[in-house]
Length: 140
Image (tube, rainbow, N blue to C red):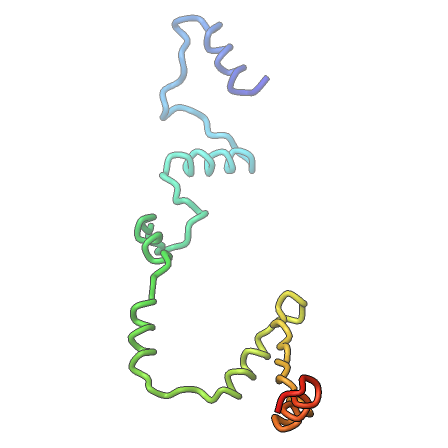
């Protein structure tokens, strides 16, 4: 049992004429425990400051924080800036930048360029075909 419960129990059992002594006549306890208890009582009476907060901190509105961190679309501004510029980058430089930013995985590699086959020229000339036609079909 705690001391306060025992004290309350004893107060209930006291005779009705024998109450507590007036506050001025009370005897103060002596010793380190009494001083600690007095400090605790004094601290409990005063309103406490929340020690978890930083001194001078201002509570911010959640709506303001949301608007501050909300993504902003800069597309129109960027398009205006790009369209004002007339400089066209060198193709070799752009290719080099693309190669540097490309990943090493096979899915990041561009498809291999297939060289187009040039139609092979015939060995025979038009005159050779006419000559063959005359010989084979008998036409002049």
